[in-house]
Length: 153
Length: 419
Image (cartoon, rainbow over all chains, first blue to last red; front, side, top):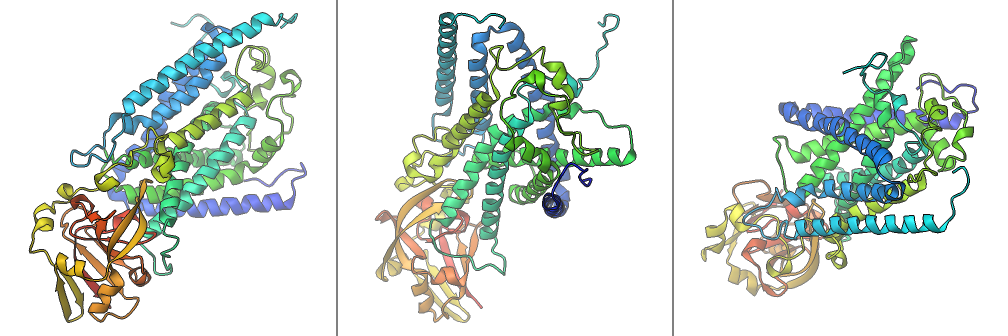
Protein backbone atom coordinates (compact mmCIF):
# COMPACT_ATOMS: atom_id res chain seq x y z
CA UNK A 1 0.00 0.00 0.00
CA UNK A 2 1.91 2.98 -1.19
CA UNK A 3 1.15 6.40 0.28
CA UNK A 4 -1.16 8.35 -2.00
CA UNK A 5 0.35 10.72 -4.48
CA UNK A 6 -0.51 14.38 -4.42
CA UNK A 7 -4.01 13.61 -5.73
CA UNK A 8 -5.78 15.04 -2.73
CA UNK A 9 -6.36 12.00 -0.58
CA UNK A 10 -7.35 12.98 2.91
CA UNK A 11 -5.43 11.50 5.79
CA UNK A 12 -8.62 9.91 7.08
CA UNK A 13 -8.87 7.73 4.02
CA UNK A 14 -5.27 6.67 4.34
CA UNK A 15 -5.79 5.79 7.99
CA UNK A 16 -8.92 3.80 7.14
CA UNK A 17 -7.01 1.90 4.50
CA UNK A 18 -4.16 1.12 6.83
CA UNK A 19 -6.57 0.00 9.56
CA UNK A 20 -8.49 -2.19 7.12
CA UNK A 21 -5.25 -3.66 5.87
CA UNK A 22 -3.97 -4.40 9.36
CA UNK A 23 -7.29 -5.90 10.54
CA UNK A 24 -7.56 -7.97 7.39
CA UNK A 25 -4.04 -9.30 7.70
CA UNK A 26 -4.61 -10.18 11.36
CA UNK A 27 -7.87 -12.05 10.64
CA UNK A 28 -6.38 -13.86 7.66
CA UNK A 29 -3.31 -14.81 9.69
CA UNK A 30 -5.55 -16.23 12.42
CA UNK A 31 -7.37 -18.25 9.75
CA UNK A 32 -4.05 -19.44 8.39
CA UNK A 33 -2.96 -20.52 11.83
CA UNK A 34 -6.23 -22.42 12.39
CA UNK A 35 -5.67 -24.06 9.02
CA UNK A 36 -2.09 -24.96 9.94
CA UNK A 37 -3.48 -26.89 12.91
CA UNK A 38 -5.40 -29.03 10.42
CA UNK A 39 -2.34 -29.85 8.33
CA UNK A 40 -3.04 -33.57 8.68
CA UNK A 41 -5.77 -32.99 6.09
CA UNK A 42 -3.54 -30.78 3.93
CA UNK A 43 -4.07 -32.79 0.75
CA UNK A 44 -7.84 -32.79 0.96
CA UNK A 45 -7.98 -29.12 2.03
CA UNK A 46 -5.52 -28.05 -0.64
CA UNK A 47 -7.48 -29.91 -3.28
CA UNK A 48 -10.74 -28.18 -2.36
CA UNK A 49 -9.12 -24.76 -1.98
CA UNK A 50 -7.26 -24.88 -5.29
CA UNK A 51 -9.93 -26.90 -7.07
CA UNK A 52 -12.51 -24.14 -6.82
CA UNK A 53 -10.13 -21.56 -8.29
CA UNK A 54 -9.02 -23.92 -11.07
CA UNK A 55 -12.57 -24.87 -12.01
CA UNK A 56 -13.60 -21.25 -12.05
CA UNK A 57 -10.59 -19.74 -13.82
CA UNK A 58 -9.79 -22.53 -16.25
CA UNK A 59 -13.23 -24.00 -17.02
CA UNK A 60 -16.17 -21.77 -16.16
CA UNK A 61 -14.67 -18.42 -17.15
CA UNK A 62 -13.33 -19.53 -20.56
CA UNK A 63 -16.77 -21.03 -21.23
CA UNK A 64 -18.39 -17.68 -20.42
CA UNK A 65 -15.90 -15.83 -22.62
CA UNK A 66 -16.61 -18.25 -25.47
CA UNK A 67 -20.33 -17.82 -24.86
CA UNK A 68 -19.93 -14.06 -25.09
CA UNK A 69 -18.10 -14.37 -28.39
CA UNK A 70 -20.77 -16.67 -29.81
CA UNK A 71 -23.43 -14.26 -28.64
CA UNK A 72 -21.71 -11.28 -30.22
CA UNK A 73 -20.94 -12.98 -33.52
CA UNK A 74 -23.82 -15.33 -34.24
CA UNK A 75 -26.83 -14.29 -32.21
CA UNK A 76 -29.14 -11.62 -33.63
CA UNK A 77 -29.37 -8.42 -31.62
CA UNK A 78 -32.87 -8.86 -30.24
CA UNK A 79 -31.89 -12.15 -28.57
CA UNK A 80 -28.80 -10.93 -26.78
CA UNK A 81 -30.19 -9.17 -23.73
CA UNK A 82 -32.79 -11.86 -22.95
CA UNK A 83 -30.16 -14.59 -23.37
CA UNK A 84 -27.69 -12.85 -21.04
CA UNK A 85 -30.36 -12.30 -18.40
CA UNK A 86 -31.54 -15.89 -18.61
CA UNK A 87 -28.02 -17.33 -18.54
CA UNK A 88 -27.03 -15.32 -15.45
CA UNK A 89 -30.15 -16.40 -13.57
CA UNK A 90 -30.30 -20.00 -14.82
CA UNK A 91 -26.56 -20.59 -14.51
CA UNK A 92 -26.19 -19.37 -10.96
CA UNK A 93 -29.35 -21.10 -9.73
CA UNK A 94 -28.27 -24.34 -11.42
CA UNK A 95 -24.81 -24.24 -9.84
CA UNK A 96 -26.40 -23.48 -6.50
CA UNK A 97 -28.80 -26.40 -6.87
CA UNK A 98 -26.22 -29.05 -7.82
CA UNK A 99 -26.13 -30.60 -4.32
CA UNK A 100 -29.91 -30.99 -4.18
CA UNK A 101 -30.35 -31.91 -7.87
CA UNK A 102 -27.95 -34.82 -7.43
CA UNK A 103 -29.31 -35.64 -3.95
CA UNK A 104 -25.79 -36.76 -3.08
CA UNK A 105 -26.38 -36.41 0.63
CA UNK A 106 -29.63 -38.39 0.71
CA UNK A 107 -29.87 -40.89 3.56
CA UNK A 108 -31.98 -44.05 3.25
CA UNK A 109 -33.14 -43.77 6.86
CA UNK A 110 -34.04 -40.07 6.74
CA UNK A 111 -36.87 -39.23 4.35
CA UNK A 112 -37.09 -35.68 5.75
CA UNK A 113 -33.85 -34.70 4.01
CA UNK A 114 -33.80 -33.76 0.30
CA UNK A 115 -37.50 -34.49 0.01
CA UNK A 116 -38.57 -32.11 -2.76
CA UNK A 117 -39.01 -32.78 -6.49
CA UNK A 118 -35.81 -30.91 -7.41
CA UNK A 119 -35.35 -32.16 -10.97
CA UNK A 120 -38.93 -31.37 -11.93
CA UNK A 121 -38.61 -27.89 -10.44
CA UNK A 122 -35.35 -27.32 -12.25
CA UNK A 123 -36.88 -28.48 -15.56
CA UNK A 124 -39.80 -26.08 -15.03
CA UNK A 125 -37.40 -23.22 -14.23
CA UNK A 126 -35.43 -23.98 -17.40
CA UNK A 127 -38.59 -24.09 -19.52
CA UNK A 128 -39.95 -20.86 -18.02
CA UNK A 129 -36.67 -19.02 -18.65
CA UNK A 130 -36.49 -20.35 -22.21
CA UNK A 131 -40.05 -19.22 -22.87
CA UNK A 132 -39.18 -15.86 -21.32
CA UNK A 133 -36.21 -15.46 -23.66
CA UNK A 134 -38.36 -16.15 -26.72
CA UNK A 135 -41.10 -13.80 -25.56
CA UNK A 136 -38.65 -11.02 -24.72
CA UNK A 137 -36.86 -11.38 -28.04
CA UNK A 138 -40.17 -11.09 -29.90
CA UNK A 139 -41.09 -7.98 -27.94
CA UNK A 140 -37.70 -6.40 -28.63
CA UNK A 141 -38.05 -7.11 -32.36
CA UNK A 142 -41.58 -5.71 -32.54
CA UNK A 143 -40.45 -2.54 -30.77
CA UNK A 144 -37.53 -2.18 -33.14
CA UNK A 145 -39.84 -2.60 -36.14
CA UNK A 146 -42.21 0.08 -34.90
CA UNK A 147 -39.44 2.54 -34.23
CA UNK A 148 -37.89 3.81 -37.45
CA UNK A 149 -34.13 3.35 -37.38
CA UNK A 150 -32.17 6.43 -36.66
CA UNK A 151 -29.71 7.45 -39.28
CA UNK A 152 -26.20 6.30 -38.57
CA UNK A 153 -27.06 3.96 -35.72
CA UNK B 1 -1.80 -23.69 -37.43
CA UNK B 2 -0.42 -20.19 -37.33
CA UNK B 3 -0.37 -17.87 -40.26
CA UNK B 4 2.53 -15.46 -40.66
CA UNK B 5 2.32 -12.59 -38.25
CA UNK B 6 -0.32 -14.35 -36.14
CA UNK B 7 0.93 -16.37 -33.25
CA UNK B 8 -1.09 -18.23 -30.64
CA UNK B 9 -0.39 -16.70 -27.27
CA UNK B 10 -1.98 -16.54 -23.84
CA UNK B 11 -4.66 -13.86 -23.60
CA UNK B 12 -3.75 -10.46 -22.23
CA UNK B 13 -5.84 -8.17 -20.12
CA UNK B 14 -6.26 -5.85 -23.10
CA UNK B 15 -7.90 -8.59 -25.16
CA UNK B 16 -11.12 -8.50 -23.19
CA UNK B 17 -14.04 -6.22 -23.90
CA UNK B 18 -14.67 -3.59 -21.29
CA UNK B 19 -18.08 -2.05 -21.78
CA UNK B 20 -19.72 -4.23 -19.17
CA UNK B 21 -16.63 -5.34 -17.32
CA UNK B 22 -16.13 -2.14 -15.46
CA UNK B 23 -15.30 -0.78 -12.06
CA UNK B 24 -18.84 0.57 -11.87
CA UNK B 25 -20.24 -2.97 -12.03
CA UNK B 26 -17.46 -4.60 -9.99
CA UNK B 27 -17.73 -2.15 -7.11
CA UNK B 28 -21.52 -2.36 -6.89
CA UNK B 29 -21.66 -6.15 -7.00
CA UNK B 30 -18.65 -6.27 -4.69
CA UNK B 31 -20.40 -4.07 -2.12
CA UNK B 32 -23.30 -6.53 -1.80
CA UNK B 33 -20.97 -9.50 -1.91
CA UNK B 34 -19.02 -7.96 0.95
CA UNK B 35 -22.24 -7.43 2.92
CA UNK B 36 -23.24 -11.08 2.36
CA UNK B 37 -19.82 -12.33 3.46
CA UNK B 38 -19.94 -10.05 6.50
CA UNK B 39 -23.33 -11.44 7.54
CA UNK B 40 -22.23 -15.01 6.90
CA UNK B 41 -19.03 -14.46 8.91
CA UNK B 42 -20.75 -12.97 11.96
CA UNK B 43 -23.59 -15.50 12.03
CA UNK B 44 -21.07 -18.29 11.45
CA UNK B 45 -18.96 -17.06 14.35
CA UNK B 46 -22.07 -17.01 16.51
CA UNK B 47 -22.85 -20.61 15.62
CA UNK B 48 -19.26 -21.65 16.24
CA UNK B 49 -19.40 -20.17 19.74
CA UNK B 50 -22.85 -21.69 20.30
CA UNK B 51 -21.51 -25.13 19.57
CA UNK B 52 -18.45 -24.69 21.71
CA UNK B 53 -19.19 -21.93 24.19
CA UNK B 54 -15.99 -20.10 25.19
CA UNK B 55 -15.44 -19.34 28.85
CA UNK B 56 -15.89 -15.60 28.44
CA UNK B 57 -19.34 -15.91 26.85
CA UNK B 58 -22.59 -16.45 28.76
CA UNK B 59 -24.69 -17.95 25.98
CA UNK B 60 -28.16 -16.38 26.25
CA UNK B 61 -31.33 -18.49 26.30
CA UNK B 62 -33.44 -15.70 24.87
CA UNK B 63 -34.71 -14.90 22.38
CA UNK B 64 -35.53 -18.56 21.84
CA UNK B 65 -35.45 -18.01 18.07
CA UNK B 66 -32.01 -16.37 18.14
CA UNK B 67 -30.11 -19.35 16.81
CA UNK B 68 -32.80 -20.09 14.27
CA UNK B 69 -32.73 -16.59 12.79
CA UNK B 70 -28.96 -16.16 12.79
CA UNK B 71 -28.42 -19.50 11.05
CA UNK B 72 -31.23 -18.81 8.56
CA UNK B 73 -29.42 -15.55 7.76
CA UNK B 74 -26.14 -17.43 7.40
CA UNK B 75 -27.54 -19.71 4.71
CA UNK B 76 -29.47 -16.91 3.03
CA UNK B 77 -26.39 -14.69 2.76
CA UNK B 78 -24.32 -17.60 1.48
CA UNK B 79 -26.88 -18.53 -1.18
CA UNK B 80 -27.27 -14.94 -2.37
CA UNK B 81 -23.49 -14.67 -2.54
CA UNK B 82 -23.25 -17.36 -5.23
CA UNK B 83 -24.57 -15.24 -8.16
CA UNK B 84 -22.86 -12.17 -6.71
CA UNK B 85 -19.46 -13.89 -6.57
CA UNK B 86 -19.86 -15.31 -10.08
CA UNK B 87 -20.67 -11.91 -11.59
CA UNK B 88 -18.00 -10.20 -9.52
CA UNK B 89 -15.31 -12.65 -10.66
CA UNK B 90 -16.54 -12.44 -14.25
CA UNK B 91 -16.18 -8.67 -14.15
CA UNK B 92 -12.52 -8.81 -13.12
CA UNK B 93 -11.49 -11.95 -15.00
CA UNK B 94 -9.27 -10.03 -17.48
CA UNK B 95 -7.09 -8.94 -14.60
CA UNK B 96 -5.98 -12.54 -14.21
CA UNK B 97 -3.99 -11.99 -17.40
CA UNK B 98 -2.46 -8.72 -16.30
CA UNK B 99 1.27 -8.51 -16.96
CA UNK B 100 3.62 -8.44 -13.99
CA UNK B 101 5.44 -5.12 -14.06
CA UNK B 102 9.16 -5.43 -14.88
CA UNK B 103 10.43 -2.81 -12.49
CA UNK B 104 10.99 -1.13 -10.11
CA UNK B 105 11.33 -4.03 -7.72
CA UNK B 106 9.10 -2.38 -5.13
CA UNK B 107 6.28 -2.23 -7.65
CA UNK B 108 6.87 -5.87 -8.60
CA UNK B 109 6.74 -6.88 -4.95
CA UNK B 110 3.49 -4.97 -4.31
CA UNK B 111 1.98 -6.43 -7.46
CA UNK B 112 2.85 -9.98 -6.48
CA UNK B 113 1.64 -9.49 -2.90
CA UNK B 114 -1.65 -8.01 -4.02
CA UNK B 115 -2.33 -10.75 -6.55
CA UNK B 116 -1.36 -13.35 -3.98
CA UNK B 117 -3.84 -11.91 -1.51
CA UNK B 118 -6.54 -11.95 -4.19
CA UNK B 119 -5.70 -15.57 -4.95
CA UNK B 120 -6.22 -16.39 -1.27
CA UNK B 121 -9.48 -14.41 -1.23
CA UNK B 122 -10.91 -16.14 -4.30
CA UNK B 123 -9.88 -19.60 -3.12
CA UNK B 124 -11.31 -19.00 0.35
CA UNK B 125 -14.55 -17.45 -0.93
CA UNK B 126 -15.23 -20.28 -3.37
CA UNK B 127 -14.35 -22.85 -0.71
CA UNK B 128 -16.78 -21.33 1.78
CA UNK B 129 -19.70 -21.18 -0.64
CA UNK B 130 -19.13 -24.63 -2.13
CA UNK B 131 -18.55 -26.51 1.13
CA UNK B 132 -21.29 -24.59 2.92
CA UNK B 133 -23.85 -25.48 0.27
CA UNK B 134 -22.75 -29.09 0.26
CA UNK B 135 -22.92 -29.27 4.04
CA UNK B 136 -26.51 -28.06 4.06
CA UNK B 137 -27.42 -31.03 1.87
CA UNK B 138 -25.23 -33.32 4.02
CA UNK B 139 -22.88 -34.16 1.14
CA UNK B 140 -19.34 -34.69 2.40
CA UNK B 141 -17.02 -36.09 -0.29
CA UNK B 142 -13.86 -34.98 1.55
CA UNK B 143 -11.73 -36.15 4.42
CA UNK B 144 -11.26 -32.89 6.36
CA UNK B 145 -13.56 -31.86 9.19
CA UNK B 146 -16.19 -29.57 7.69
CA UNK B 147 -16.68 -27.55 10.81
CA UNK B 148 -12.99 -26.89 11.54
CA UNK B 149 -12.18 -26.13 7.90
CA UNK B 150 -15.21 -23.88 7.34
CA UNK B 151 -14.31 -21.98 10.50
CA UNK B 152 -10.62 -21.52 9.67
CA UNK B 153 -11.27 -20.57 6.06
CA UNK B 154 -14.04 -18.23 7.21
CA UNK B 155 -11.36 -16.20 9.00
CA UNK B 156 -9.11 -16.43 5.97
CA UNK B 157 -11.91 -15.26 3.68
CA UNK B 158 -13.04 -12.33 5.82
CA UNK B 159 -9.44 -11.29 6.50
CA UNK B 160 -8.40 -11.27 2.87
CA UNK B 161 -11.69 -9.55 1.99
CA UNK B 162 -11.08 -6.72 4.47
CA UNK B 163 -7.50 -6.41 3.22
CA UNK B 164 -8.78 -6.29 -0.36
CA UNK B 165 -11.22 -3.50 0.53
CA UNK B 166 -8.38 -1.59 2.18
CA UNK B 167 -6.19 -1.90 -0.90
CA UNK B 168 -8.98 -0.96 -3.33
CA UNK B 169 -10.69 1.71 -1.25
CA UNK B 170 -9.89 4.68 -3.54
CA UNK B 171 -11.20 2.80 -6.58
CA UNK B 172 -14.26 1.54 -4.74
CA UNK B 173 -15.04 5.05 -3.59
CA UNK B 174 -14.57 6.51 -7.05
CA UNK B 175 -16.64 3.80 -8.71
CA UNK B 176 -19.50 3.94 -6.24
CA UNK B 177 -19.81 7.70 -6.39
CA UNK B 178 -19.42 7.81 -10.17
CA UNK B 179 -22.08 7.11 -12.79
CA UNK B 180 -23.06 3.52 -13.57
CA UNK B 181 -23.12 3.88 -17.32
CA UNK B 182 -20.36 5.35 -19.39
CA UNK B 183 -21.56 8.84 -20.29
CA UNK B 184 -20.00 8.52 -23.68
CA UNK B 185 -17.31 5.95 -24.11
CA UNK B 186 -15.58 7.77 -26.90
CA UNK B 187 -14.85 10.79 -24.76
CA UNK B 188 -13.43 9.05 -21.75
CA UNK B 189 -9.71 9.72 -21.65
CA UNK B 190 -7.63 6.58 -21.24
CA UNK B 191 -6.42 7.58 -17.80
CA UNK B 192 -8.96 9.89 -16.24
CA UNK B 193 -7.52 9.68 -12.77
CA UNK B 194 -4.18 7.94 -12.61
CA UNK B 195 -3.99 5.61 -9.63
CA UNK B 196 -0.95 5.68 -7.37
CA UNK B 197 2.15 3.95 -8.56
CA UNK B 198 2.08 0.19 -8.31
CA UNK B 199 -1.68 0.11 -8.40
CA UNK B 200 -2.67 -0.19 -11.96
CA UNK B 201 -6.21 -0.83 -10.86
CA UNK B 202 -8.40 0.56 -13.52
CA UNK B 203 -9.80 -2.17 -15.67
CA UNK B 204 -11.42 0.45 -17.88
CA UNK B 205 -8.51 2.66 -18.40
CA UNK B 206 -5.89 0.73 -20.34
CA UNK B 207 -8.26 -0.10 -23.14
CA UNK B 208 -10.91 2.57 -23.03
CA UNK B 209 -9.74 4.12 -26.22
CA UNK B 210 -9.26 0.83 -28.01
CA UNK B 211 -12.61 -0.79 -27.35
CA UNK B 212 -14.96 2.01 -28.18
CA UNK B 213 -14.95 1.09 -31.80
CA UNK B 214 -15.68 -2.58 -31.42
CA UNK B 215 -18.19 -2.48 -28.64
CA UNK B 216 -20.60 0.08 -27.43
CA UNK B 217 -22.90 -1.76 -25.06
CA UNK B 218 -25.80 0.62 -25.24
CA UNK B 219 -26.13 0.56 -29.00
CA UNK B 220 -25.42 -2.90 -30.34
CA UNK B 221 -28.31 -4.66 -28.64
CA UNK B 222 -26.04 -5.56 -25.75
CA UNK B 223 -27.11 -5.50 -22.13
CA UNK B 224 -26.31 -2.28 -20.28
CA UNK B 225 -24.42 -2.12 -17.02
CA UNK B 226 -27.63 -1.22 -15.24
CA UNK B 227 -29.31 -4.17 -16.89
CA UNK B 228 -26.55 -6.50 -15.78
CA UNK B 229 -26.73 -5.17 -12.22
CA UNK B 230 -30.50 -5.64 -12.11
CA UNK B 231 -30.12 -9.17 -13.46
CA UNK B 232 -27.54 -9.89 -10.76
CA UNK B 233 -29.85 -8.62 -8.00
CA UNK B 234 -32.67 -10.77 -9.36
CA UNK B 235 -30.40 -13.84 -9.50
CA UNK B 236 -29.18 -13.20 -5.94
CA UNK B 237 -32.73 -12.72 -4.67
CA UNK B 238 -33.94 -15.87 -6.40
CA UNK B 239 -30.97 -17.80 -5.02
CA UNK B 240 -31.79 -16.69 -1.48
CA UNK B 241 -35.52 -17.34 -1.76
CA UNK B 242 -35.39 -20.61 -3.66
CA UNK B 243 -32.81 -22.33 -1.46
CA UNK B 244 -32.72 -20.73 1.93
CA UNK B 245 -35.65 -18.62 3.11
CA UNK B 246 -38.18 -21.41 3.53
CA UNK B 247 -35.86 -23.26 5.85
CA UNK B 248 -36.35 -20.53 8.41
CA UNK B 249 -39.65 -18.84 7.60
CA UNK B 250 -42.46 -21.41 7.62
CA UNK B 251 -44.66 -19.22 5.40
CA UNK B 252 -42.08 -19.38 2.63
CA UNK B 253 -41.62 -23.13 2.66
CA UNK B 254 -43.41 -23.60 -0.63
CA UNK B 255 -41.27 -20.91 -2.27
CA UNK B 256 -37.97 -22.53 -1.36
CA UNK B 257 -38.19 -25.05 -4.16
CA UNK B 258 -34.50 -25.92 -3.90
CA UNK B 259 -34.43 -26.04 -0.09
CA UNK B 260 -32.90 -29.15 1.44
CA UNK B 261 -36.08 -29.91 3.38
CA UNK B 262 -39.77 -29.50 2.71
CA UNK B 263 -40.37 -29.21 6.45
CA UNK B 264 -42.28 -32.47 6.67
CA UNK B 265 -41.29 -35.23 8.99
CA UNK B 266 -42.51 -37.49 11.76
CA UNK B 267 -45.06 -35.50 13.79
CA UNK B 268 -44.61 -32.63 11.35
CA UNK B 269 -40.98 -31.93 12.23
CA UNK B 270 -37.90 -32.85 10.14
CA UNK B 271 -35.04 -34.82 11.64
CA UNK B 272 -31.30 -34.73 11.14
CA UNK B 273 -30.29 -38.14 12.48
CA UNK B 274 -32.65 -41.07 12.66
CA UNK B 275 -32.77 -43.60 15.47
CA UNK B 276 -31.51 -46.20 13.00
CA UNK B 277 -28.47 -44.09 12.04
CA UNK B 278 -27.70 -43.46 15.70
CA UNK B 279 -28.03 -47.23 16.38
CA UNK B 280 -30.21 -46.69 19.43
CA UNK B 281 -33.16 -48.75 18.27
CA UNK B 282 -33.19 -51.65 20.73
CA UNK B 283 -32.03 -49.58 23.72
CA UNK B 284 -34.51 -46.73 23.18
CA UNK B 285 -37.48 -49.11 22.94
CA UNK B 286 -36.44 -51.28 25.88
CA UNK B 287 -39.15 -51.14 28.61
CA UNK B 288 -36.30 -51.42 31.10
CA UNK B 289 -34.98 -47.99 30.06
CA UNK B 290 -34.32 -45.69 32.99
CA UNK B 291 -33.16 -42.10 33.21
CA UNK B 292 -30.27 -41.82 35.64
CA UNK B 293 -29.91 -38.55 37.57
CA UNK B 294 -26.54 -38.08 39.22
CA UNK B 295 -25.30 -35.43 41.62
CA UNK B 296 -22.07 -36.55 43.25
CA UNK B 297 -22.96 -39.62 45.33
CA UNK B 298 -26.68 -39.07 45.00
CA UNK B 299 -28.26 -41.10 42.18
CA UNK B 300 -31.90 -41.46 41.16
CA UNK B 301 -33.42 -43.64 38.47
CA UNK B 302 -36.70 -42.76 36.75
CA UNK B 303 -38.77 -44.75 34.28
CA UNK B 304 -40.75 -43.01 31.54
CA UNK B 305 -43.91 -43.53 33.64
CA UNK B 306 -42.15 -41.82 36.58
CA UNK B 307 -41.27 -38.88 34.34
CA UNK B 308 -44.85 -38.66 33.05
CA UNK B 309 -46.06 -38.51 36.67
CA UNK B 310 -43.94 -35.42 37.38
CA UNK B 311 -45.31 -31.87 36.72
CA UNK B 312 -45.44 -31.34 32.95
CA UNK B 313 -44.69 -28.13 31.11
CA UNK B 314 -45.23 -27.16 27.50
CA UNK B 315 -42.93 -24.86 25.56
CA UNK B 316 -43.09 -23.72 21.96
CA UNK B 317 -39.48 -23.85 20.82
CA UNK B 318 -37.77 -24.11 17.45
CA UNK B 319 -35.38 -26.88 16.63
CA UNK B 320 -32.74 -25.13 14.55
CA UNK B 321 -29.84 -26.66 12.74
CA UNK B 322 -26.58 -25.12 11.70
CA UNK B 323 -27.50 -26.06 8.14
CA UNK B 324 -30.06 -23.28 8.21
CA UNK B 325 -33.28 -25.23 8.50
CA UNK B 326 -35.48 -24.93 11.51
CA UNK B 327 -38.95 -25.85 12.63
CA UNK B 328 -41.16 -24.60 15.43
CA UNK B 329 -42.72 -27.24 17.61
CA UNK B 330 -44.66 -27.65 20.83
CA UNK B 331 -42.76 -29.75 23.32
CA UNK B 332 -44.15 -31.14 26.58
CA UNK B 333 -42.11 -32.67 29.36
CA UNK B 334 -40.37 -32.16 32.68
CA UNK B 335 -38.34 -29.06 33.45
CA UNK B 336 -34.66 -29.90 33.72
CA UNK B 337 -34.50 -27.59 36.75
CA UNK B 338 -37.18 -29.73 38.48
CA UNK B 339 -35.12 -32.86 37.84
CA UNK B 340 -32.00 -31.21 39.21
CA UNK B 341 -33.89 -30.23 42.35
CA UNK B 342 -34.72 -33.94 42.89
CA UNK B 343 -31.01 -34.66 43.38
CA UNK B 344 -30.43 -31.46 45.39
CA UNK B 345 -28.26 -29.83 42.75
CA UNK B 346 -27.47 -26.16 43.35
CA UNK B 347 -29.28 -23.73 41.03
CA UNK B 348 -27.46 -22.88 37.82
CA UNK B 349 -25.34 -26.04 37.85
CA UNK B 350 -23.85 -27.17 34.56
CA UNK B 351 -25.34 -30.50 33.48
CA UNK B 352 -23.79 -33.25 31.41
CA UNK B 353 -26.34 -34.97 29.17
CA UNK B 354 -25.62 -38.50 27.94
CA UNK B 355 -27.52 -40.10 25.06
CA UNK B 356 -28.06 -43.78 24.35
CA UNK B 357 -26.26 -42.99 21.11
CA UNK B 358 -22.80 -44.52 21.31
CA UNK B 359 -21.49 -43.98 17.80
CA UNK B 360 -21.12 -40.88 15.63
CA UNK B 361 -20.73 -37.39 17.02
CA UNK B 362 -23.02 -35.45 19.34
CA UNK B 363 -23.87 -38.38 21.62
CA UNK B 364 -23.66 -36.07 24.61
CA UNK B 365 -23.87 -32.41 25.49
CA UNK B 366 -23.37 -29.99 28.35
CA UNK B 367 -26.15 -27.67 29.46
CA UNK B 368 -24.55 -24.50 30.86
CA UNK B 369 -26.02 -23.48 34.21
CA UNK B 370 -28.13 -20.66 32.82
CA UNK B 371 -29.61 -22.96 30.15
CA UNK B 372 -30.34 -25.76 32.62
CA UNK B 373 -32.10 -23.27 34.91
CA UNK B 374 -34.28 -21.77 32.16
CA UNK B 375 -37.97 -22.64 32.76
CA UNK B 376 -38.34 -23.53 29.07
CA UNK B 377 -35.50 -26.06 29.11
CA UNK B 378 -37.27 -29.40 29.12
CA UNK B 379 -36.65 -33.07 29.09
CA UNK B 380 -39.37 -33.51 26.48
CA UNK B 381 -41.66 -36.55 26.45
CA UNK B 382 -44.19 -35.31 23.90
CA UNK B 383 -44.20 -33.45 20.61
CA UNK B 384 -47.40 -31.64 19.63
CA UNK B 385 -49.22 -33.60 22.34
CA UNK B 386 -48.18 -37.03 21.05
CA UNK B 387 -45.64 -39.43 22.48
CA UNK B 388 -42.26 -38.39 21.13
CA UNK B 389 -41.43 -40.23 17.88
CA UNK B 390 -38.41 -42.51 18.13
CA UNK B 391 -36.61 -40.39 15.51
CA UNK B 392 -37.24 -37.30 17.67
CA UNK B 393 -35.60 -38.95 20.67
CA UNK B 394 -38.05 -41.30 22.44
CA UNK B 395 -38.09 -41.99 25.37
CA UNK B 396 -37.02 -38.40 26.08
CA UNK B 397 -34.89 -35.60 24.70
CA UNK B 398 -33.47 -32.25 25.71
CA UNK B 399 -35.06 -29.16 24.20
CA UNK B 400 -33.81 -25.72 25.22
CA UNK B 401 -34.32 -22.22 23.85
CA UNK B 402 -31.82 -20.64 21.43
CA UNK B 403 -29.48 -23.63 21.10
CA UNK B 404 -27.79 -25.29 18.13
CA UNK B 405 -29.77 -28.37 17.10
CA UNK B 406 -26.82 -30.67 17.67
CA UNK B 407 -26.95 -29.94 21.40
CA UNK B 408 -30.67 -30.79 21.69
CA UNK B 409 -29.63 -34.28 22.73
CA UNK B 410 -32.02 -37.11 21.87
CA UNK B 411 -32.53 -40.57 23.49
CA UNK B 412 -31.28 -39.23 26.84
CA UNK B 413 -30.11 -41.85 29.34
CA UNK B 414 -28.29 -39.84 31.98
CA UNK B 415 -28.17 -36.32 33.45
CA UNK B 416 -25.14 -35.64 35.60
CA UNK B 417 -24.55 -32.48 37.59
CA UNK B 418 -21.06 -31.09 36.96
CA UNK B 419 -19.33 -29.52 39.89
